[in-house]
Length: 61
Image (cartoon, one colour):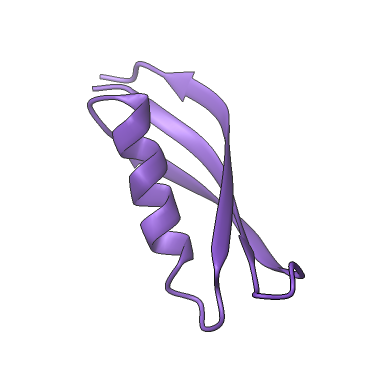
């Protein structure tokens, strides 16, 4: 399975950036990796929206 490095940024209801983190996720496909990163980032109190960006994909074994 490939590893995805995904930057996920959380925003509040007023559109202000709360924080951003890079998540390293092993997943079957890109869509699953993005959903996992979003769910990890949404745990912050006050998060309304999460934007993601794939930084890199590697095929580590």
